[in-house]
Length: 162
Length: 420
Ligand code: SF4
Image (tube, rainbow over all chains, first blue to last red; front, top):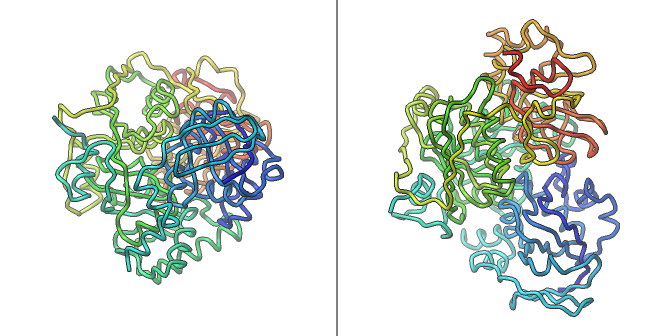
């Protein structure tokens, strides 16, 4: 997994900033993506390429339970969010969608905008190819990994219901 | 060693004698509430995965509220789809126009919240219902789909924090001021992943509605849920609305908390949370020169009958300042009717405010009171994030209904005590 870092060095980036409520009358990923991070950075959608990462501070995704926040970011091409910590419901929504939310304070402190990063999930490692640095993170707990490996919570449940 | 009310409810619902903070459990859910915004994606997921039946139609309650009455064609389609789906599923607990209201006000009012229950909804303020001694938490749409399919959901058992609210609440200071003060003290992620349990003489004195205001905003400190041990007031509130049997759980006196904090409110004054975080708390008198374009009274935090009474008492025989507009949104149809019977709606209209039908509407920047760039709103709601009620260049100041009403009269942020 390789991509460019988009750094927002701010704590408490909330779901209204990730996808404003005025767009919640749609749940189409492509439509939501057009407005991802709009109130924080109007050019976000122009800058992001498929496979890129967001790097941010503490409590990322606080606020509402709207899963639209995860879909907007994924629709925009974001592969993972790396942050100091995550808000609870946003974190659940990431896991349930098989979308990566990685807590790694070391990376948040050192990664600069546009750095090229490579994420190694099994080893819990982020390699900064631009700066030749490596950051460790706690691999996801077993239960969460099961959901991600199944391709999301619904996939897991579907199998269990059969 | 004792356990908390949250741990007791979660243990019973996951078939265990005891659960410990940090443990992952698969938990039985008693009631699933669905509103308009997060439910259609869940229906899509169920259909995509060929899951044709919900686990139990009787345990699902549908309360469209965010863009109700329909804001535009897209939201109309959204609700139409939910209506068709509910019908096909045999879900009869459907609160359509005429019985509608903001979900977190409507659910307890209609008797769906009883002590000891587990409740989830695709909405972050689901923590409100812990005020009646239930375990209640907000989830996303995938969680919602999973719960609708199986009646169960995975949780990490949260650590609990205990907030002992002591002293005597001064006149003009309300439940909203208490919870804003607490969020100001611990910060907007001060209770991240945890259960916030509230107790103490001040909580005992508060009405059930006031307790809901407090638990409603637990999420604004990052908490998984807010909870209050049931007492005689709780049981009276519940028994007048529900015939269902239930079990009351209470925290043991030697229960273990990750942190215990005593908050003495005797010296508390009316507060306001400044943009753009609910934790930016100042005394109203410290910011009383800030002009407001709009005063908004409503929402799942403070749109209940008590809130309307307090605001009406202040607005009676007074008028909203020239250049300021006031919007009053009773949270449910029953509250609207009650306010009408008591003459409160007339007081608001005579003061120059407008009264709308129940809706979330402007609380989340949906419609019915959107702010333009550069505009300021004093609001009884729970979030003041960038763009929350409209333009990203607008500002929201959170306060109690009394402070909202007083500010509407003067056209700037005002300590309500001068009008009591
Ligand atoms: S009133 Fe506001 S906070 Fe409450 S459920 Fe509606 S949008 Fe959410």
